Amino acid sequence: MKLDEIQKRLLREVADLHKVPEGAYNIRSNSTSAGRRSTENIEIVSKTDVSGIDIFIKPNTKNESVHIPVVLTESGLKEVVYNDFHIGEGADVVIVAGCGIDNCGNQDSQHDGVHTFYVGRGAKVKYVEKHYGSGDGKGKRILNPVTEVHMEEDSTMEMEMVQIKGVDDTDRKTIADLKEGAKLVVRERLMTHGEQQAISTYTVTLNGDNSSADVVSRSVARDNSFQKFDAKIVGNAECHGHTECDSIIMDNGRILAVPGLEANNVDASLVHEAAIGKIAGEQLIKLMTLGLDEHEAEEQIINGFLQ
Amino acid sequence: MLELKNISFNVESEGQNKEIIKNVDLVIPDGKLIVITGPNGGGKSTLARLIAGIEIPTSGNILFNGEDITESTVTERARMGISFAFQQPVRFKGIRVIDLLRLAAKKQLSGADACEYLSAVGLCAKEYVDREVNASLSGGELKRIEIATILARSTALSIFDEQEAGIDLWSFQNLIDVFRHMRDNIKDGSIIIISHQERILDIADEIIVIKDGTVVDNGTKDEILPGLIGTSSALKCRKQ
Ligand SMILES: Nc1ncnc2c1ncn2[C@@H]1O[C@H](COP(=O)(O)OP(=O)(O)O)[C@@H](O)[C@H]1O
Ligand SMILES: [Mg+2]
Image (cartoon, rainbow over all chains, first blue to last red; front, side, top):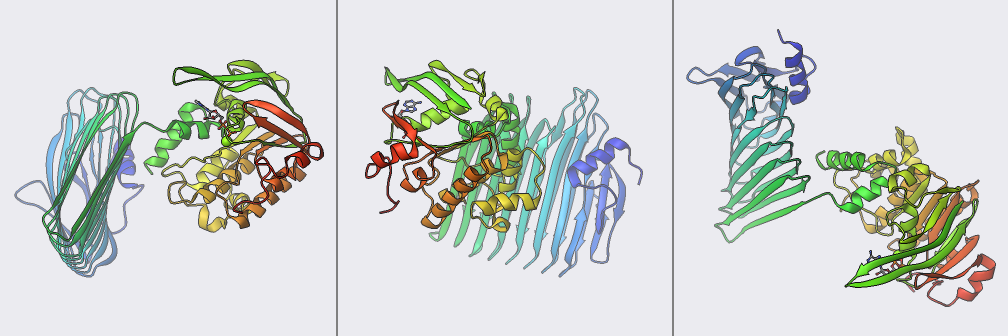
């Protein structure tokens, strides 16, 4: 695989990859495939009509993983990529996606990844997605991911989405629909700096009895950054839905949390929680009595909060 | 040695100037365990916060080992060797017990070291090191973790503010054992415990009684304790 040092660093940030991953993988670098491997149970095929790949995971594939990181290092590159995941019944897999952009130039770089998951009956998926930006060019680093999740009966999906550093503009949309007994857990962690903007919109529709969704966002908005968390859960059956936005604001950071609960069935139980505020003074003081200065105390509190 | 010289602390409350601490003079000698008692609202916690630097006195001076620390920040005092266990411990989302102990100990604590501090406060280390210091811990568990961080710091001056409140009876005995053990290994450090409990007063070298923001009594345990028995400043046993 031919990757330069910047590309390797981005890969480490977004996928914890220090070398070629085990299992199936597809590494996309500046709009071309820098490496791919299918395995007996997981097949990765390029799309022919649009840019992107289809990932086919055979039924009952157990304890296997797929890594599909994307890195962009050419300033001014803009791409839309469609990745479809077909996860067979009863499979149990880990999918690691993620995008790192290094922009040293003056033109905006943008990656819009459209991920669609077809999660088969009884399948279990853990999905990890990290976004990271670096480079000191004037060009923005923009990521607009769309994630669509279609969950069959008794399937489980756990999504962990992290964006801590360096992405200037994000408009994330996550749409999910769940059949009977399906379970969706989302953990989003977000930190914005400078003039960054991040919008995250969820629409989760619980169509089957005993389906459940738990969407939790923890975020920190610093400097002049702005975040919007817009989480909507629709309950069309006997189901449980929970959304939570737990945020720390610092400096002139701004956060807008928009709760949205729609119950269309008398047995739907939906809860929304939101808490936004600055770091509690007593937390800072406690750490200062342990010998940390105010800045160190802040860093510890934020690091913990975003763990 | 800690010296408070003519310390007063006023706050602006409902448009009125309220004197919370009034002209307090105190000397906390090295090698001693001091218990501060007195009625609720008397100013004990405020005094502790003044010593830790969380509040700055309106007038007067605070000297620590001869150095004037009246204007020193909380961080500076902590680094000089002052530790303070809060009456109401603070919760942190995402910070684990081991993280807090490491911050307190200022070094890469091994799992075994962390275990020792947690065992000392009666917590099963294995179950607790990786727990978050968040709302999932009970008030009693939090207090014990708070004490463990003070043990991990092992500084010249340790201040404990009403640690027994919210702790169950079994750990109350345990708490006294922790304080006794600290007293036995005190060397040239000093310990201040704020408490109403007779059994804690009983392990004091010296007792200070604070009421309405002033020191109303101050002396050795044998001088002071008999006069307190039966008052709210020396409660027989909790929950009775
Ligand atoms: N910052 C403050 N503003 C207003 N009143 C205060 C402040 N701090 C303490 N007090 C008041 O001072 C008195 C002493 O409080 P405290 O030191 O907590 O007493 P103790 O610990 O002895 O129960 C109480 O009446 C309390 O309400
Ligand atoms: Mg008090």
